[in-house]
Image 1 (cartoon, helix red, strand yellow):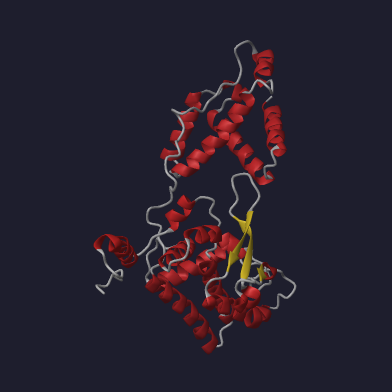
Image 2 (cartoon, rainbow, N blue to C red):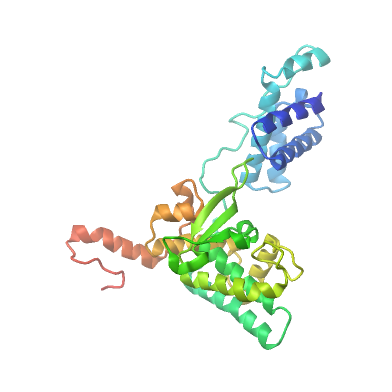
Length: 348
């Protein structure tokens, strides 16, 4: 009976066009819950959900957002087997006796409510401009150091320095960056000065739950970043000997650079500089949003660039400096005070 329920739920999700990976993850979670309760679904009750949730938070110390996602998946399975249109309640009563049937195990009083737009670590922040410059300088120094000593790692050091510049220069995530191909670059008629690097097609953007990756086009806005990519593609990447591989960033063995490798090199550079451990590769994406905001870029433009559906998501990424806030305050006060020209925030 249980296996038939799982097969039916799998078919229902497939009919909705959900990805196979999502369906498989949900099925594994249901089986884990079955093992934890030592009961079949027709014997589950709300108390089982509550005990399991306590174990997730108390014993396993999972994040609130992770616990909620687990609860959502179990709610979906519970609603499926309780839905009269599928007939599982009647089937269970016929097989196991009157009154033995699935019941809803998730309700508003025993599941985590989604109250905040952002539930990540409050320590998450962008680089300051000084920190960012120090980080890029350090990455470039590793290239020079390896080249001077004729070490084998000069190519990888150059590649990694370019990786971090691309993450920041186009506001990307790690996975989006690792999955870039050479052919993802293209011309932008509105910015002919950037040549073939005027537009970047991001084909593996963050997907909605159960949906395929979302694509977006990101316009190039930083000339120095374009120069860095052009130099890497034209002068450095060919020396990896991976001409037949489509990836933009390749390894010395001819494979595609992985997100975990980006993490490791980032942590090594961050720690070498004594920067706060709260800084992550994703902090470069936060920095992109913050610095464009400080430089006066249109908010809607930034939102489209980073692939946010809602402006509230972009706002979460924005951590403007005190100097920017002071200048904005003076611009807001100028009309009321009758100032001919807004104060620039430095007393002028």
